Length: 211
Image 1: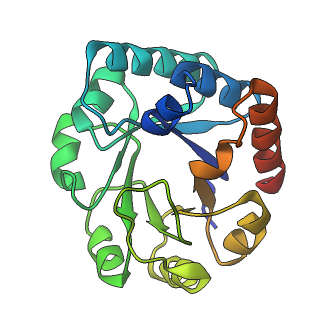
Image 2: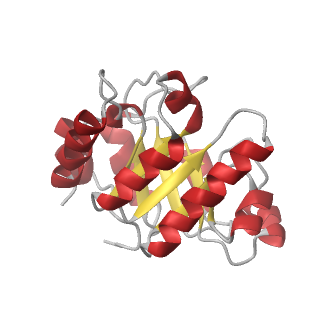
C-alpha cells in the first residue's frame, strides 16, 4: 500500500478555529511540534491580507520542519506559497489547476465510484474519499460512504488514499483496515475546552492512533 501520505493528516480550518477563538498559526505550530508531517490550510472565508499572512506563517512553520503544507481549493495560493493543493469536485479540475501550480503535490476529493473513475484520468498525486461518517464540520457534506465506501475506493485506485469525514481517533483502526493510507481530521482535533493542554492531548491521541 502506498505510503506517500502521512497517516495523520490534520486540517487547519480557519473558520472553525475563529469560532473557538484560537489562532490558526498557533494551532499549526502545536500540530507540527507534536509530530504532524502534513497539514492542510482550509480557509473558506474571503481572502484578506491578514488571512494570507497567516497562511504564509503556517507555510513557514511547515518549511522549517520539513512538513508538507497543502492549500485547500486555491491553485493560485498554492503557487504563491509554493505549497501543495487539495481540490474539491466544484473547484478547478486538476488538469487546469496544474497550469497554475504545475509542481504542487495535488490531491482531489471524491465521493462516489463515478468520481473515482474520472479521477484516474486526472494528474493527481493522491485522492480523498468521504465523507466516511456523518460530520458537522462541512457545510454541505456528501452522503456518508461508510467503511464499505472506503474499501471500494481502495479497490478502484492505486493512488494514496485519504479518508475524511466524521472519523474519531477511536475509529481510526477500522478506517485503516478498510484500506485508507491516511486519515484527514478537522473536528475531532478540537477539544470542547480549547486550551493548549487539551489540544495537545487530543493531537497526541491522534498520533498514537495513526502510528
